[in-house]
Image: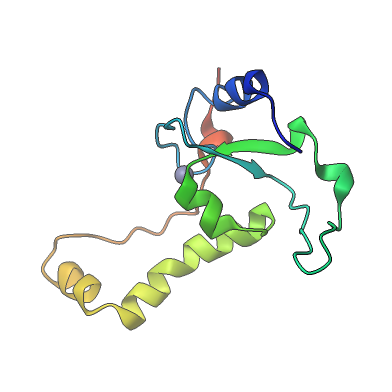
Length: 120
Ligand SMILES: [Zn+2]
């Protein structure tokens, strides 16, 4: 579904001009994310859920959230983000040093998306 200019304006304002997921301010190049993925089939050109290609199924997203979410449903995206701490602790020497020297602190919080907290 190709959004019209007016639909993109409406979508951008859906959550106060911010990314539905991380809450950062959206630039002009924000992405229109399918909340429930349509799972495009790149090989055959079709999609598994064409009925999800509606304006209601779009969230405004910053490019990086959209790229990480990819074609994941919301709860999988939440799990992936929560798992970043584990991989940072396993793989990133810089992260481990920053933590050891008190430059950052981990918190036991559940991943909450901006749109879940947003009220008009
Ligand atoms: Zn974002």
